[in-house]
Image 1 (cartoon, rainbow, N blue to C red):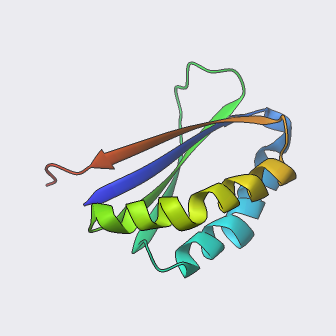
Image 2: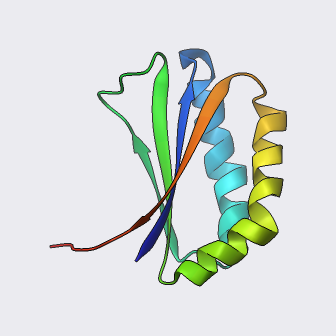
Length: 102
């Protein structure tokens, strides 16, 4: 299992607007590309950062699916996000592989 993780750190003041926009616009559009089979939204409870921190994880079975998404779609989705929330967040991306699960 391949997990593409986006970690967002933002001001408390945009939390509700950001979460609503992600759930009604950005995430459904990303899922419609067909390169991920599911997603998760997580709130980081003990973040060392100021403000609030969320992780959005997109799951796929093959690294090639992520690579195709990255090459064809990722920049466009990041541009949309930047236009909506310009200078009000920091984004970190991580690509992970699930090794074990119980």
